[in-house]
Length: 323
Image (tube, rainbow, N blue to C red; front, top):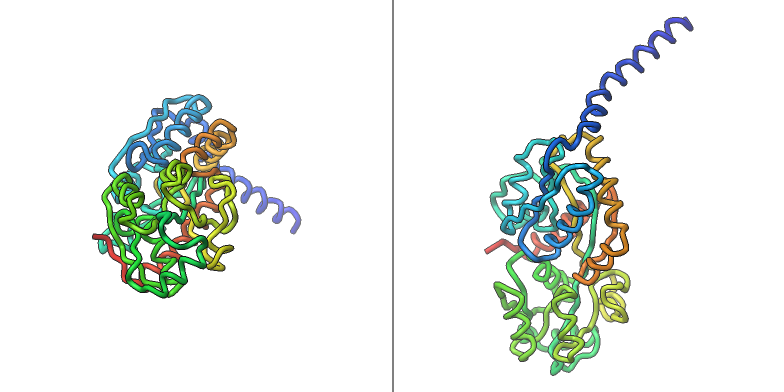
């Protein structure tokens, strides 16, 4: 009986070794050519972070790592989903990747089926700013004013489904207020109208509004993270100044096509995480409005699913569809 058990165990060990051998060999041979990181847009926080990561991981990987900028929208995700699952095509993206199917009737990929999470990289809250002439000092004041004048106050936003749009929708849903949306194609004209008082308020990434807050042309009320952040020293949270439980934070991460071998995923996660811990990278990303959080495939997957659940509810309840 003992001999039979020993033979069975030996057979299982052999089978496991044979199953792991191809992955181990693949990991040793990886990468065998240039690694491409697809990033949506040019000059934004995704592009900046992708380029810093690419530069940092090229030497330890032993191959060039390039950033392939594509238009924002579904194209970056589509290209990644269609690429070979060999670790040579990666995607650096945020919520536009995983919220697209909630906002559009047809998306050329399934976020749960077509991607392999690799590394949770950064998060970024927004700042709630108002024109200085608005007679409010706190979020509580703003809520009271908005309730007293429903449909009178307006807010600046980018395209439908953008971070600042969904954050404003979440704010209205939680406060029972009605704000009028004013849509802009770019941040610059939105800020111009904010500073002239044409628009009353907006939720914006810290990098865009920080200089105008410092100059006194805009007034900051709060930050949308659950806790105070180094991105906005001294600025209280929305939750602490009038709306308990409010949190709206955008995450970003690195993905690969589905079925990318775990050995390659682990190698990439190790190198990217090591890069993100470098003080100079953390500091530069902070100045661009995002803070490094780091985390493995499981943490990125949890962040994606959490935001889909939270914002998906708002998108459905408020019937939000992309233009």
